[in-house]
Amino acid sequence: MLKLAVLVSGGGTNLQAIMDAIENGTIKDTRIEVVISNNRKAYALERAKNHNIPAECISPKSYETREDFNKALLAAIDSYNVDLIVLAGCLVAIPSIMVEKYRNRIINIHPSLIPSFCGKGFYGLHVHEAVLARGVKVTGATVHFVDDGTDTGPIILQKPVMIEQGDTPEVLQKRVMEQAEWIILPKAISLIAQGKVSVVDGKAVITD
Image (cartoon, rainbow, N blue to C red):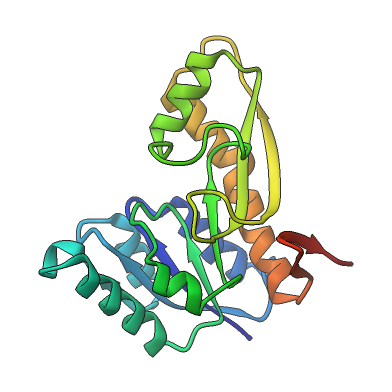
């Protein structure tokens, strides 16, 4: 049984995609142990509660220093004895102490085809605004392992999405979610649950 902690900051649509995939059997032998948000008002916490999943808010605002917050977040995750941490729209920088302890056991979904439109400042709607401003014809989403950089860890899965005439950032964001994010994030978790993903020489390798 693969035990997950899912970290979120907002509405939790990727969390919903994971929960749905577990419930319909697309993802097997997997359970979400806890959903943690830095935002007390995140609707993702309600989604978790509606599925009888423990939901916690651990916010940097509640701690005097960032180091105190980092330690509290790590302690909370440790207490659930999870195998994999999933960043599903989490806008908090993951502390290095967590990356080190859970090396190659933290994955993130990013709304572009890395290495394009990623790194510092590229999150949420900002990504889609930059994509449209650049005039590219294809965008997409990427699931990758988290390392010490920003969006620099080994890539597990990618899925392209075509830009369409008249796209706005909001319209494009929705299409990338529907056609890419909600598909490849559950798929990546399923592959990991089946023991089919490993990291070799800094690259993610998927085996049959």
